[in-house]
Length: 346
Image (tube, rainbow, N blue to C red; front, side, top):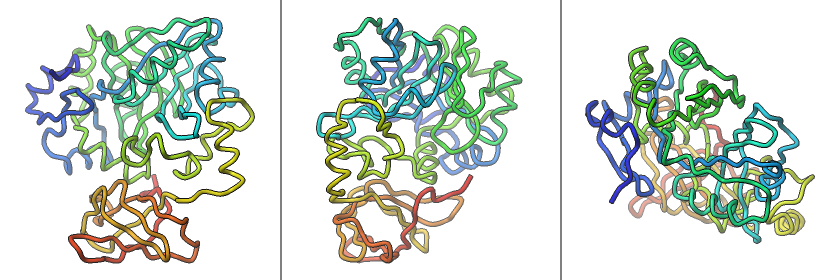
C-alpha cells in the first residue's frame, strides 16, 4: 500500500497525475511537465516533496555524530546554516546524498533521499552517541518553493524567505534556502496540521503546483545528481565529481578508502554531454568518449536549451581533449558535445 503526503487530497483536487516514488504516491504532473518547468524557470513553482526523508537529531553529541557519519565537515558552517553532504560506506561508496539543516548547536535536521530514509535514520539510531532521533515524516509535510519570484512570494505568504543555505525556524515552519532546481527559493518543513493552509496560501499568491517530472528535468539541467541513477553505494565521490563535498580535515566513515583512491586515481568518471538536436538520451544507453566506454546514468530533454542532455560514467576517465561523446540509440550511434555541468547557468 502506497504512502501519502498530508496534501494528497489537495493534489487530487487539482487534477494531479500520480506515480510511485519510493513507495509514496506523489504528483508526477498537473498541467504538464513543460508548463511546470517553465513556471519554475520564469516565475514560482511549488513542489510537494514529502516523500523525502527527514529526521531530527538533538542532544549534546548531535554535531559530533553528524561529523562522524557524514563526509562533509560541519566546521565549515554554523548553526543557522545548511550543508550538502554524503553518507559513505567503508569502501567509500555513496550510501546517500544528504542535506543537513543546523538549527541550534545541539539540534539539526538530517534530510536523506526518500528511498534511503530508513537506512540513514537507522545508522544514526544505532550509533553510540548521546542523541535523540525523531522521525519527522509521519508528522510533517515538505514543500519546495522555487523560482525567480520565490523569495518575494515566500516573504509575503509565510513570512520566511531564507537566503541560500540559511535555515530559519518559526513554528509551525522550518525553512532553508535549499532546493533541487538551481533557482532561488526555499524548502519548508511544515507541521502536517498546517500543511494544507500553507500550500493553499502559496497557490493563492501565484505559485504554480509542480510535479516531480518537472523537478527531474530541472535538476538535470543544473547537473545535480540523483541517487539511484547518478550515485549509488558502489560509486565514490571522486568518481562522481563530488570531491568538493568531502571534508578531509575530519574523520568519517569511508575516509581511508577515499584517501587510497585519491592516490591511485579513479577507474571511471561521470561526464556530461548534450546532443545537437532534440534527441533524448535515456538511462542505460551505451556511450563512448574517445577510448572510454560506459552507459548513460541520467538523460532528458532540456526545454530551455531545446536539446537532449545527459550524464554518464565512462571508463577509463577520458582525456581532456576528448570533447565528443557518442550515444547509442536503438542500435545507432549519435554524436554529442561533451559538457561540464551545469548545462544551464543560473
